[in-house]
Length: 485
Image (tube, rainbow, N blue to C red):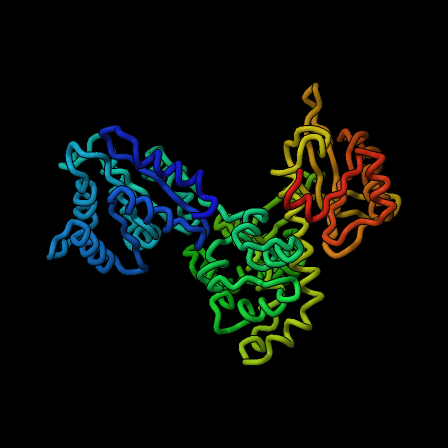
């Protein structure tokens, strides 16, 4: 188990509760984050019952459940349930009266509920104060990867609303933890790998059989071995991620939206233009992709009604920017090296560059010290700043907000991120100009705003010299991103 101490402690707390009543917990998260590993370990440690559902009809699911239940109890003849009401009653009576609580896990619960929509209501009744069971208290855990469905289990007027005493989301590893998990000490290499596969643990173990790039020179060959190789699971992973979501029916439209975002179209209007559709036609698709955790919607720091859509899973960005446009060639043996060679510019501008910007915002949000930012941050966003005199606008990679002693919102810092450029005085002057524009337009306190320069390639001596003299200029390279604050 790697970096799941919090999740494990919460599961143990839930399982160890000594109350006499049955309790419910919900565990969710994107696929391949280790949810099943954690829950299986919990059952093994306490002798609990673990059932992993498959996509099947109600009759077949009941048959599989009956076999698993009989095997758990050591019976030679499996249960034959006619309906879930009977199955739930037996399941909730598994615990021995007077003994410690028993953990019961229903993994891939969305599959069961899809075939039997009444199941959440049956569980609600079984968990209610009027329920009668012959056994002791059960600690029931429902687990699933369909984020939109799992999120709806406990929301609004859903039957299980208000029943859960645990609602646990197992996240992906962030960029720092991902580097540790992969065992990569070369920080430039670590970020390149992270820009392709993100922080999903399975991508560093089962999917590549532990094959990590040996060094920076091995990064390209590693991509060819594991990601652009039709014989490896990462080759089709992005397609399967969409196919596994039950709410994504018009997959062509959803792939189109993701492709538009991967190509740099982050506004609704830009996405609509890319797809040659009306902006109003995309509302449902964007909402569903956001609910399933595949994209995020981030408000513009300086325009309350404007938002930027970004892909949340790096493998999806890599697929739609690099692989999907070249899919027919990639499926032919021997073509991957040529595709990779001619995709280098796209990889740098559409994959690594935007990913580096997101990593920088993540660092500001979770790792940067107050002394670095000039105060306690309250929100971190990107934004667009108009420049009326020049009849243009400036994209800002990071805007960091906080509050002064009187509670007024202040702009603590603004930042620019360049993955492959050595940053110099020109980049600093651009940030200074944007700060002046923000101060002149009013509405935001920017006179003490600090300037953050992020670079994956380094800084000029002139810029380093200025930063040493002025604490309001902060230089953040890869070492500080991964190890400092």
